[in-house]
Amino acid sequence: MDIKIIKEGQKTIVILDGRIDTSNAEKFQNDIAPLLVGDNPDIDIDCSGMTYTSSQGLRSFLTLQKSVNARRGKMVMRNMNPQVKEVFDITGFSNIISII
Amino acid sequence: MHCEMILEEYHEKQPIYLKMQEFILEKLKKSFETKGVVVAGIESRIKTEKSLIGKLEIKGYKYKTIADITDILGVRVITNYSDDVDIVAAIVENMFEMDWDNSVDKRKMLDFDRFGYISLHYICRIPASLFHDDAMPEINEFRFEIQMCSSLQHVWANMHHDTGYKTEVEIPVEYQRNMSRLAGMLELIDEQFSRIRKEITDYRRKVQALVATGNFDEVPLNGDTFRSYLELKPFKRLADKIASINQAEIYEDSLMPYYNVLIRMNMKTLGDVGRMYKECKDAAYQLALLQLAGTGLDIVAYSVTLQNLCIVYILKKGFGEGGLVQMFALLYGKSDYNNQRAHRIYEQATKLKLV
Image 1 (cartoon, rainbow over the protein chains, first blue to last red):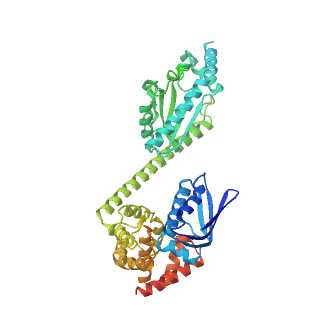
Image 2 (cartoon, rainbow over the protein chains, first blue to last red):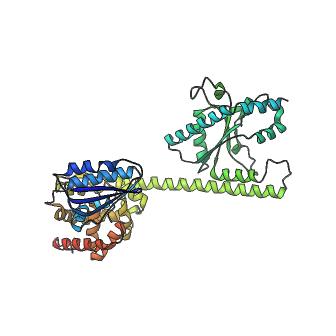
Image 3 (cartoon, rainbow over the protein chains, first blue to last red):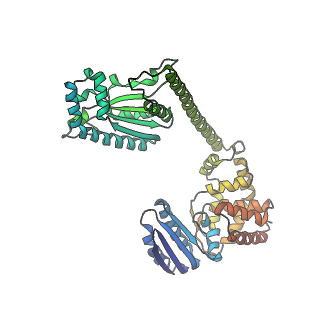
């Protein structure tokens, strides 16, 4: 899993590429740690390169969403491929995280 | 001559009044917040020199020093409802040292045939136990006024003040009569607002009692009742069963977004929701089993229960893929993906012989 974090004005663009699974979940959690601080975050996650997420990935996204909510910010995940989107759907995570 | 001395004192003691003002406002705000009392606003002012001169010209003989004037610092707490004035008053009484001899409940002073500015005026001091500053001992000696009134009383007071009731010009009787008529009308509106709030509170209590006793058919489905219903964790067994597929952790998210879906599905009472659960829970579990088994996904949102219940209900009622697309559009907005998802689920449901 590769992750790029780009600051564009007030917005933070996150570009994900590859799989999030047991082997790299901890690294992914560390990689997104900078997104867990700051007021009124506006995070846009481009998932077009993400090919899979495990439960650990879901947990990381949940942690991030909760942190964003607590800081009165917003977060969207976009361009998710249907296979990855299905993981969010069948676990009910589509009800928690805004996916467009 | 002594009026000039009072004016001198007024200027000299400004820092003390400013300190008192800052302290009182902060203290009141914090106290309302802690006690969960919602107020429409808190205003304060230090009397202007012009206003003080006006007061001294008329009643100067009554005051020996600035400390005799009780309204140099004035605070007004404005409540949304007239009923809340007494709650605010109780907080003020507990917080400050009261000068009861000079406090006035104007609400009790009006004759039965008079209407007007009906507010509660308290004269208080900051007790040393609450705040003390050796450099400013007057902070605990000077009195200040707290007025407490409802938003409508506040509006009336402002309008009355703005139209010049304090001027020496004689106000024509017709004008006074019109102001009184308005005051009477506002008093009636204030009462109605309080009554409506009480009725809503009573209704909520009644509904909560019905929900608690399980008389769901008697409880209309609305945002309030659905929220109370969800507190009973009505889908917990299904959630546990779905979680057991992968020994998953359940993340307790809100099911409130599904309220609009239930309404769209023409559910009228909580009894209807209960019946849907009874009729669809097994198939909702089967659907989850088909989707989750073998994935190793060991976290699920609590909302997956109602998600699957609604899916099964829609398909059982014969609304097909179109019904699912509408449900997803209600929850997540319109998108092409909704069609793909509906189609995928429809195929899964066919396998499970739900359609």
